[in-house]
Image (spheres, rainbow, N blue to C red):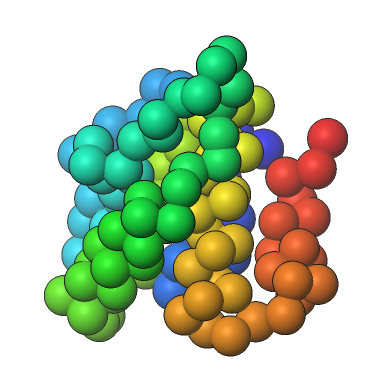
Length: 116
Protein backbone atom coordinates (compact mmCIF):
# COMPACT_ATOMS: atom_id res chain seq x y z
CA UNK A 1 0.00 0.00 0.00
CA UNK A 2 1.61 3.27 -1.02
CA UNK A 3 2.42 5.78 1.69
CA UNK A 4 1.78 3.35 4.53
CA UNK A 5 4.91 2.44 6.49
CA UNK A 6 5.40 -1.24 7.28
CA UNK A 7 6.78 -2.01 10.73
CA UNK A 8 9.96 -4.04 10.28
CA UNK A 9 11.25 -4.24 13.87
CA UNK A 10 11.18 -2.15 17.04
CA UNK A 11 11.00 1.51 16.02
CA UNK A 12 12.07 0.90 12.42
CA UNK A 13 9.56 1.01 9.56
CA UNK A 14 9.85 0.84 5.77
CA UNK A 15 7.93 3.06 3.36
CA UNK A 16 8.01 2.49 -0.39
CA UNK A 17 7.33 5.66 -2.34
CA UNK A 18 8.61 7.59 -5.34
CA UNK A 19 6.93 10.86 -4.40
CA UNK A 20 7.68 11.40 -0.75
CA UNK A 21 9.28 14.38 0.92
CA UNK A 22 11.66 13.82 3.81
CA UNK A 23 10.44 17.19 5.07
CA UNK A 24 7.36 15.36 6.41
CA UNK A 25 9.49 14.41 9.42
CA UNK A 26 7.81 15.46 12.66
CA UNK A 27 8.15 15.06 16.43
CA UNK A 28 7.19 11.38 16.42
CA UNK A 29 8.45 10.23 12.99
CA UNK A 30 11.87 10.58 11.39
CA UNK A 31 11.92 9.79 7.69
CA UNK A 32 15.27 8.97 6.10
CA UNK A 33 16.81 7.31 3.05
CA UNK A 34 19.82 5.07 2.66
CA UNK A 35 22.87 7.31 2.90
CA UNK A 36 24.60 8.47 -0.27
CA UNK A 37 27.72 6.89 1.25
CA UNK A 38 26.16 3.46 0.78
CA UNK A 39 26.22 2.44 -2.85
CA UNK A 40 26.64 -0.65 -4.95
CA UNK A 41 29.81 -1.31 -6.94
CA UNK A 42 28.40 -3.16 -9.95
CA UNK A 43 30.30 -6.11 -11.38
CA UNK A 44 28.51 -6.25 -14.69
CA UNK A 45 24.86 -5.38 -15.23
CA UNK A 46 23.80 -6.58 -11.80
CA UNK A 47 22.26 -4.41 -9.10
CA UNK A 48 23.36 -5.96 -5.82
CA UNK A 49 23.47 -6.98 -3.12
CA UNK A 50 25.75 -4.53 -1.36
CA UNK A 51 29.12 -5.73 -0.13
CA UNK A 52 29.84 -6.28 3.58
CA UNK A 53 31.51 -2.89 3.93
CA UNK A 54 28.33 -1.14 2.77
CA UNK A 55 26.20 -3.35 5.04
CA UNK A 56 28.43 -2.46 7.99
CA UNK A 57 28.15 1.26 7.13
CA UNK A 58 24.35 0.96 6.99
CA UNK A 59 24.29 -0.79 10.39
CA UNK A 60 26.44 1.95 11.91
CA UNK A 61 24.24 4.66 10.37
CA UNK A 62 21.03 3.05 11.62
CA UNK A 63 22.49 2.59 15.11
CA UNK A 64 23.42 6.30 15.18
CA UNK A 65 19.92 7.31 14.13
CA UNK A 66 18.29 5.04 16.72
CA UNK A 67 20.55 6.41 19.47
CA UNK A 68 20.07 10.04 18.40
CA UNK A 69 16.26 9.77 18.28
CA UNK A 70 15.21 7.48 21.14
CA UNK A 71 11.62 8.78 21.24
CA UNK A 72 10.88 8.68 17.52
CA UNK A 73 9.81 6.04 15.05
CA UNK A 74 12.30 5.78 12.16
CA UNK A 75 10.87 5.35 8.68
CA UNK A 76 13.28 4.28 5.95
CA UNK A 77 11.94 5.51 2.61
CA UNK A 78 12.77 3.38 -0.44
CA UNK A 79 11.86 3.64 -4.09
CA UNK A 80 9.47 0.78 -4.87
CA UNK A 81 11.55 -0.16 -7.94
CA UNK A 82 12.36 -3.86 -7.60
CA UNK A 83 16.14 -3.41 -7.64
CA UNK A 84 16.22 -0.51 -5.19
CA UNK A 85 13.73 -2.15 -2.84
CA UNK A 86 15.60 -5.47 -2.97
CA UNK A 87 18.82 -3.75 -1.89
CA UNK A 88 17.00 -1.83 0.86
CA UNK A 89 15.48 -5.07 2.20
CA UNK A 90 18.92 -6.68 2.07
CA UNK A 91 20.34 -3.88 4.24
CA UNK A 92 17.51 -4.07 6.78
CA UNK A 93 17.64 -7.87 6.84
CA UNK A 94 21.39 -7.77 7.33
CA UNK A 95 20.95 -5.36 10.23
CA UNK A 96 18.35 -7.63 11.81
CA UNK A 97 20.65 -10.64 11.48
CA UNK A 98 23.90 -8.97 12.58
CA UNK A 99 22.73 -6.46 15.17
CA UNK A 100 19.56 -8.09 16.51
CA UNK A 101 20.76 -11.71 16.17
CA UNK A 102 17.51 -12.73 14.50
CA UNK A 103 17.28 -16.02 12.64
CA UNK A 104 16.74 -15.71 8.85
CA UNK A 105 13.20 -17.09 9.14
CA UNK A 106 12.36 -14.34 11.66
CA UNK A 107 13.79 -11.75 9.29
CA UNK A 108 11.80 -13.11 6.36
CA UNK A 109 8.51 -12.75 8.27
CA UNK A 110 9.10 -9.01 8.69
CA UNK A 111 9.13 -8.54 4.92
CA UNK A 112 6.11 -10.69 4.02
CA UNK A 113 3.91 -7.60 3.43
CA UNK A 114 6.25 -6.64 0.54
CA UNK A 115 5.72 -9.86 -1.39
CA UNK A 116 3.85 -9.45 -4.65
